[in-house]
Length: 137
Image (cartoon, rainbow, N blue to C red):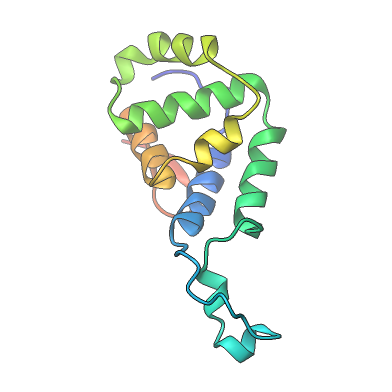
């Protein structure tokens, strides 16, 4: 099992938040009311440029160290099927060589980010049960 720079708790937090973000819909109420109750709270599930979940995810990712960000993108790639746990070092080196300052934007642009991160953890022998990550026995 690869040794991660990012904690599994941090990955778990991102999985939960990314799944919240993935549940958002296109803007369907362009004429929003003066408050959320006027619109039946429909705006809460809309994806807009000022999304608080996206801002929270981006702030969290930006606060990670470079090594933690590299591990995160490597987990995404594993979850996407770009390799297996045995390819960890190669994938991580590829990610490290292509790093830039827009990691949060890149990750937020990945459809099903939460599921891909969970699958990446699973590939390296860790499991995410919705609340926490645990080693697979």
